[in-house]
Image (tube, rainbow, N blue to C red; front, side, top):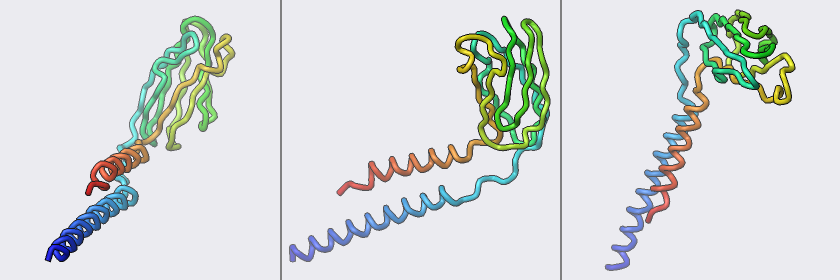
Length: 159
């Protein structure tokens, strides 16, 4: 009689674990394969101002949507600075106290580095920034998987 009760309890526990891990599995498949929105925002004209000073760009991170018309106004503070955008192979240089303009269409998705293209001193190689085109869907999927792993770790191994 007691053995039958133990077997029944173990069967219920196994059924709950099976159900839990099945739900975790289906949620994981959903995170991995549910398509992200295909409709991207309508392209707009973005006017971005960047100040280039001693070994830094301000702002150092620029975000636009794919298809946007990007107008960059580079303002050099103390010495000649340039801006070269990796992946787009475009550049501009500005004299001290002057501004230089650069216009292009952000037609490539991803994260690209921009850097000073004019040797401006000892720390010149570290004068870099990020140019992000498009949304961070991959990041959102990664956060979803991390939360799912956390839930599985906390609740999945309880008896």
